[in-house]
Length: 368
Image (cartoon, rainbow, N blue to C red; front, top):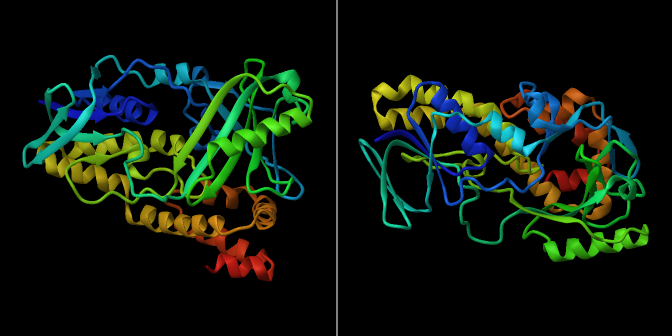
């Protein structure tokens, strides 16, 4: 029997598996295609994961801009992740890699039995589900995006060189522009719908981006990226499985980010599992869930869900106005809402300050 079996070979699953192995737990990662490359572009604020090694960072743009109705210079370093370097950093040789697709799991007092599509049954003391968003009833609040990777000299017609444009709402539509230098002479230019229920179709975002590029004299070509993130995954219920990553509702409901949170939590969850392991599988799984969702994190998550509801109800003009107010806040206040997962005072203070600064019509929306 394996001590910890992690279903899902993405960054979140690999991070937790490596952390568990480093604490002496016999660990395995299970994935239908465990050696596939991670196709998505990941970004995060530098202060969210200062321990990242240089080989896991593809680029750190010299400047970061955001636009509501006007320009804001964000004094906070943004990093682009090097997926191959991140994967190498998260690879622990003692972690067993298993190819297979989970079709079900049985839980008992002595651990879990995971059922695979090919008929195999794998036994583990603790089963971790890091396989991505669970199947949920539609419609859900979603963030969707369509992007193209362009040569930097073409992308400069849309954004200054070596500059991350975190969001740009100035054209009055219900989607914003995102530009991210990738560190290899190319730039990801993306049309993004921040939050909508149901999500804005990716095909519509593609049409908008192609039209924008054509208007700028840029031929719409290059590697395509498509994004669909469920923002309102329910908090995990009690059970013997431990949901982690997107499956464990670690996606920020109002921003769509989750990677930095998974990297931060992996060592804490692994330590909780190791400390409680001798008390039995149920105790270890319970300790892991408590490490993931202490009371402060649940309270902050509820406030973020409130923010998600407000964002879903905003018109394009109100979204631009709201983000002017947000990026006028001091960086510590911005950081509290985007990254302070257990910072209840900071999150509440940021939301209260936004409410006080908002005009009357936006205040009524923020009140729900």
